[in-house]
Length: 362
View 1 (tube, rainbow, N blue to C red):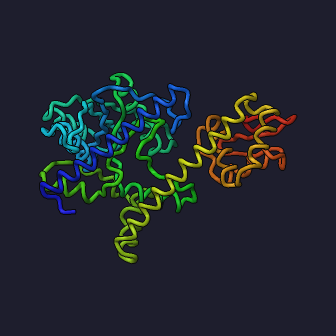
View 2: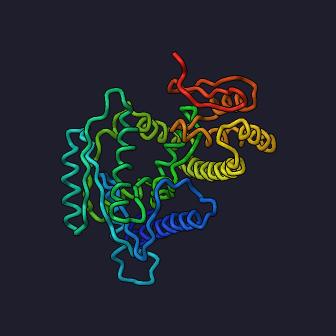
């Protein structure tokens, strides 16, 4: 889409509609949970209901987040009260300085100047170096969302808004397939972290064109060119190859499949929660609970059985088992084996008809 004045308005309208829909879903989920109905997500944090929502905007200083911020300003400042492009909201901007690059301070200063230009409140978190051996990407992601949700809570904001876009969706799908992981997608609405991602159906190239037409400055993160990261190899090598060999429509096929898989994942999660809720009358992991659970699992296909196991074990393990390990734990549940060893020197063991989750004895 060539972005002229009309194209710019259409882009802003798409973002506005996606943001409104996301905020509405968050608030509806919260209302249902408050009324004692099943929630559409496992929300660990509660969105704040307000006539004019306040959103925490994640700003790195890169192209995507700068485009997001300017699109939100366009929506907020629209002078057409009944225009779909207008979205009444208050903006709080959040920047995390990871201190991992020489240019980190430059990015922070750019964000400060940008927010000062538009009179926006900016909150900055400077991180200490991760523990030696810790996965840097996971550390950075966890630190960012912890800071964003802290701000959201302190300022009674409705949600966090991030600049994940359609290319991120496709890249994530390919990365997970290549790593033999469940092909979960980036969520447009993340109920657990109160996050809305209004750019999720917009391509990176559209955002770059928007920035170019408006002569908007941003900074390039040089780590995005580092081919030692899987995502960068997918982005710079695999995706161009797929589009060259199979046409540009290959991107659209992968994108639609990623969204369909996300819908499937949501459906399985809802069905799994219904089964777990049906067994909640018995003490968790007790012999009576396990007997009831076996009876319920006999009624459903294997594909749902292992997902029930995965969802049930997640609070204990703090990570998702995946199909292979969940099937192994399922064998323990069914009495086909005594124990299943899991990552992190943990095991699930059946004893006297009940289940325990405990460290593996040395």
